[in-house]
Length: 306
Image (tube, rainbow, N blue to C red; front, side):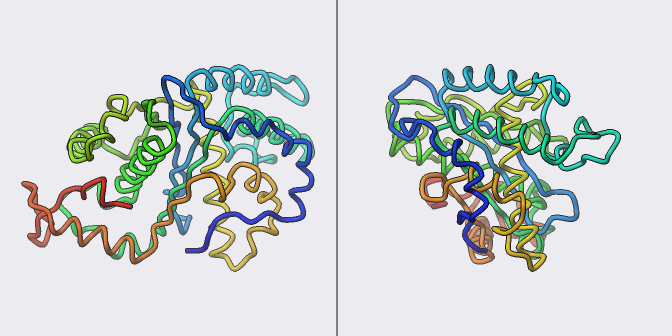
């Protein structure tokens, strides 16, 4: 899978946005970090599955929420009760909150929302799993039905990457994981496996996790709406790439180029080789549970994923 990112000439449209306070990228020794995470692409049409979001401090997320709500409440052309990126591209759908908006009005609102993200987040992160090789290698091979879908491995892969980030850059802090509510995934299974996962983490890392992950609705948790925004754009980038287009030339890339900075943020691309390796590691374990073909499985040691 190709590397995400690469700026294009259209990014110049965002020159005022790009002048945000660079102190956002310095180290802040604060009490608590929060990662807000959403998914995109499990719709039967996308070639990739994406988990993505942002990390910041609880204090900054509070400021973010106030600023985000202010932008949503702008009355022209219409105030928005909530934000979902899929609605923002449905200007002719009567059920969309953006119905009847011009592209210019829509883009102006997206620019303002993107500015709120840039002012308040510390790191973005994206995990991308190609669906075809994942299904070929993983689906139907394990007795744990959750492994039939890429969410399960992405869920733990993202947390592993963010624990490493916290350990290396913010060692005096803890990080809390907040995911968008999932209708297709068993929260009971995820929490059970999380307990096993964190117990395998090496000393100095497990202490960084602030309890079990939480699941919340993006209608109620505004930072998850920012996670929705970056997840949609990452999925769209690969959708265009798989369709034979140059994603950096597509109109949506001007936003993506400002939502994610490859030189600073975290990108985790699950290549076919990496999926194969994950399957091999799962087969080596001795947990009570077998693959559908009789081979034992469990989650790999989080210290060995990266």
